[in-house]
Image 1 (cartoon, rainbow, N blue to C red):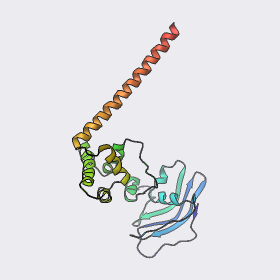
Image 2 (tube, one colour):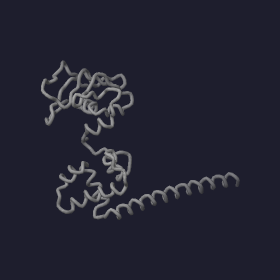
Image 3 (cartoon, rainbow, N blue to C red):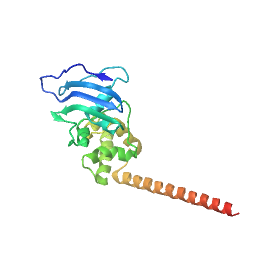
Image 4 (cartoon, helix red, strand yellow):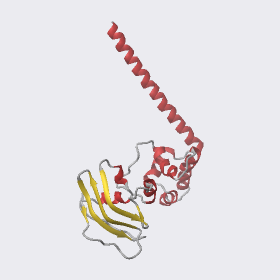
Length: 212
């Protein structure tokens, strides 16, 4: 639980700040009156023992706690002096502007391709051909000597995402990537068909067994 005694708001320009921010998980209050200011282009460390509310505070800054059932917040947080907890705030836009890097990769419950394409899709890239080209471009740049760190910085992707691409699509052209995805789709459809047929056969056996 993080408890902030008094305000440490700075008179200098700030990028992020909270003011008397409180947050609960059900009846448990994880944040109590947190007021702080974070300057632009600065490195700020939040230090404390495990379970004290550090991650809860970070998630409060981009409204990720909204996704936790039973959580609710009072007080306010600001980005460039714009309130983040007003009713008309677009939380997707907030999360686009305030990102989090977790200790371990946290993929969505989707395919590797859909995880990779999530960021570009969020920024309006919808065409499959464009997404396929994006995958190939990242891999080609690395193959021709561009450092991986530079590739992922320019393309706005995580390092783990790049290596997932490399493991699955390394050395392929856009057309080959498309063909591979088409084969994967066909394979899934065949597996589904086989499973449905197996259930039908099992059901038929049970019906015949009862009749006999």
